[in-house]
Image 1: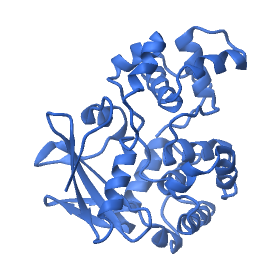
Image 2 (image 1 turned 90 degrees about the vertical axis):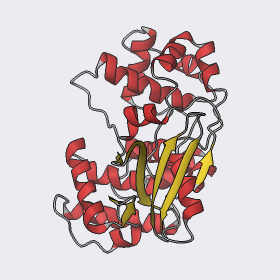
Image 3 (image 1 turned 45 degrees about the vertical axis):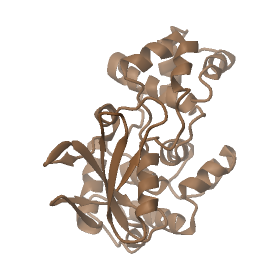
Length: 298
């Protein structure tokens, strides 16, 4: 077991409401459980998490021996709890538009994929199908091919580990091309290309270029893997949804100048990605995305 005191505002139930959708324990609905292959690929783990009245996070790791410390670290990264966020409210103090959204959504932080590996696999599986179809396929893969982990008498299944995915010959709902691309994702994970720490440590351009060498991973997916898989904190994604959300929030014209966008986002430092995600939540829930546009969402 472990206990962790968040640095900066954090509400676990609020995070799960807007992002995670993790299952909770039948015996304790206040406890969420996430199951995943642990980076380093020596096994999978389930991590049960609850928030105490003093704000601290109490967690317990279930899984293979020797990987509990890495599983704990990974679970905290998924929740963006590995980031010192005492200055996150300061962004809203400088920018009242963001401050209003921070208060509205209770200073929500980005929730990441369990790993850049799972992010990449999810993008490949979800290409040209609906979010619901993608989630259904990944859930079946976890149940049929992933590790089963028991927490308080309740079964949870992790997505297949890279070694298992590499040996996959076929799966219902996946074309042969997607199977081959998943093999490339598995190899990249085993070779260390999709390691969270590695992707965070190299220059962004270099990381994106390496990710784009993977079959089926173009500029849009590479940004998703880097920003929501590895979890960069102070970058802005170059996508239509971000521009649209900024235009709506700041009441800008149809085609704002790049210099105008840069000036706005500069004020969000050092939490530009967190602010971008906050705007995405707002525009999807309160404004709506124009039907002519399609955006990827977790």
